[in-house]
Image (cartoon, rainbow, N blue to C red; front, side, top):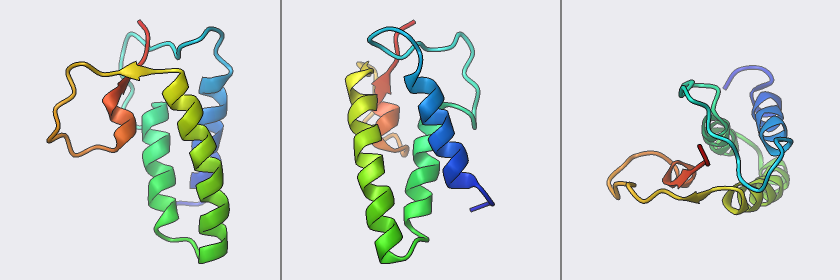
Length: 95
């Protein structure tokens, strides 16, 4: 992990959730490394390196973010079960 990785990931979620409308808007061009799904992967990586108390605190915050992300996205109909990415990549945003 790099300095401020968790803060940057949380800021990406905050920005995504300020978008108007019921569903998150998908950009026309995928931007690897800056998508909200990448931020979720970064948070998952951070959990692996935190002490127990901080892990619990971040875990509670991530649970709320996951619930909001799931509420504002749709199931991806073309998701391949063998895809190696996290669960958030099995969701799609509105175009």
